[in-house]
Length: 167
Image 1 (tube, rainbow, N blue to C red):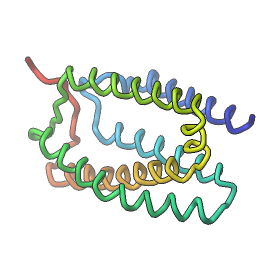
Image 2 (tube, rainbow, N blue to C red):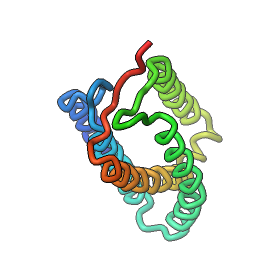
Image 3 (cartoon, rainbow, N blue to C red):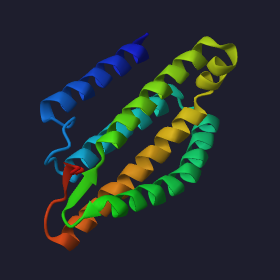
Image 4 (tube, rainbow, N blue to C red):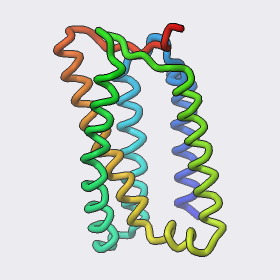
């Protein structure tokens, strides 16, 4: 019961932070602020699922191996994505892409809910190491991206701002 309460309270806190800091807007937000938020969120999920393992070294080991294996392509993909979207000191997002990401998030949450109802999906969710591996890979890629954005900002001499695509 406590893990569900902790998870819910922290998730609501992150959502409130999104509203207060206006991270839902893409007009003029510093990319480093969004990277800080993503880094904090990925750190929370990684630590939360590490705590859920109750110190089982086999689950942690499998999750760490999966995290490292998946983290490498996540880092390369994210770096390439930033390099393609950045123009000067601005990074442009297409409005269509933003809505597509929201749709995929909704589908992912729905899929997880359906998997939890089925017995095979429940076994996968209870095994914990795949989720831990995804969280570790997400955290590793966010650390890499955070330092990459800092390196880019030093090279450019200014903060990178987010903008919606002009069309």
